[in-house]
Length: 339
Ligand code: KG4
Ligand code: ZN
Image (cartoon, rainbow, N blue to C red; front, side, top):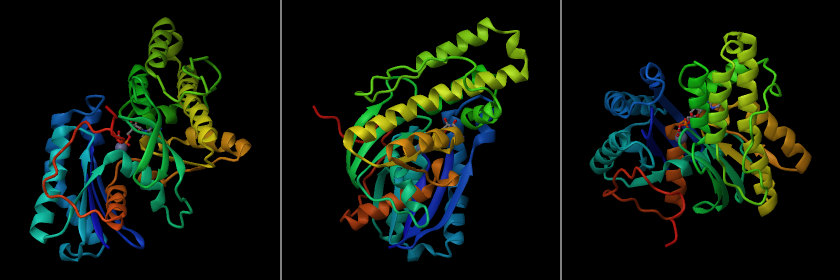
């Protein structure tokens, strides 16, 4: 079954084709340059850029996959969560194609896409159940994925998402957007023990995160040490220490969550999953506990259409028939909240 996946929930216009042999193409147009000027994603600019890029990106995905539209069996699209104007562009394009081709339209939760993204790694041995650490610009989730579609949220952030903490931290350090890659670049060669930034909520029986206090400590530190912050050497230490506080908190919680549910596989996905230090610390700590972290290749950590196409295929295999009446759902919990 050949599925086209479309993703426009934030600042990447992405489309990809996935079939039973894996990823046939993965076209992404990122809008980084557009938003960099403003230090963060400007929703209206994102929607306009999606409108301009969506058709060329879909064409590129089909061309790279050596596939014509009428060879597609279904279309999967991110319907939420995300920016409503941005989501609408992908949803409208997907609806139009599915309707004209007479094939199913599958609505996909963005975080479920991230959750399955490591399965796209060629030769992946990952099987359910596992624990997923989903770390993006808008979400920080620890999920016990018992089977595809059967998720238990073990923990989530109470305030800022970890990607947001990277982005806001980068702004305080005068670095560009997106903040994660900028901080990790500055942190290279810095002393990660130089400044003891706080690690909060480290009670190993609960798995919620809170990063806003850490951001405030960085702000206070920069304010109190303005002179020292002029020195690149010192800024490196600050970036390395800040990054360490973020990734160590993630590692402590993720390892404890795996131990709690008895999982030996930790799947890490989402934009922050591209962070090298996060990978290193999870590998170091996992090795001691018999927990194996899996990361998708860097190109699949950040937003892409392949993860959406794969989630679509998995839903189809489980009998989903699609729904042409889907709409953008900017707020959509991964697991329904019980009332
Ligand atoms: O998953 P993603 O591409 O988009 C959302 O769904 O939000 O994640 C984007 C986030 C941004 O906050 C960005 O700063 C962060 O991922 N990020 C990183 C790295 N690369 C991207 N954070 C830390 N280290 C990185 N290397
Ligand atoms: Zn994402």
